[in-house]
Image 1: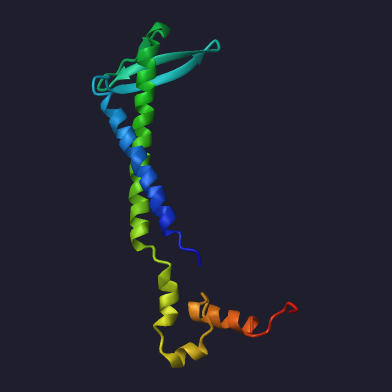
Image 2: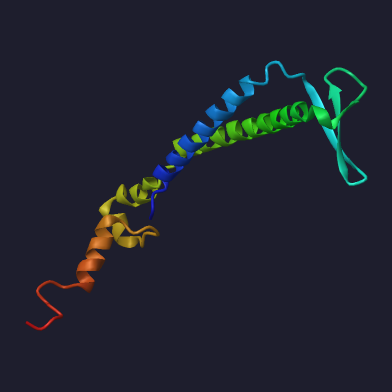
Length: 146
C-alpha cells in the first residue's frame, strides 16, 4: 500500500504558509471600519452599501470611492479564507497524527505463527510479497537463450 503521509505533510506545510500570508494581510486592515458591505445590481450596474458594525442604517458608497470598496470586500474575503485555512490545518494536523498505514501490516505481523498460517491477510506483507515473487520467478531459469 502507498503511504501518503509525506504528501499530507507537504500539503499541511503549504496550507500553513498560506495561512501566514493571509495573517500578514489581515494586519493591513487594522484601520478599516468594521461592518458589512452589500452589493446589489441596479440597471446593470453594481451598487455598494456599507453598514457599520453596531448601526442599523446602511449608507451608499459612490463609485469614486472604489479603493475603499475594494479594501472592504478584500478584507471580508481574507477573513473568510483565513477561517477556512485554520479549519483545514486543524483537521489535517489531527488526521496526520492518527494516520499510520503501517498498522495494517503490523496487525498481521504481530500475530503468532499458528494464526498466521490460518489467515489470508488483506494487506500483503513484505514477506508474502517476496515469497510470491520468488515463486513466480524461480532462480537459475533464464528465459533468454545464451
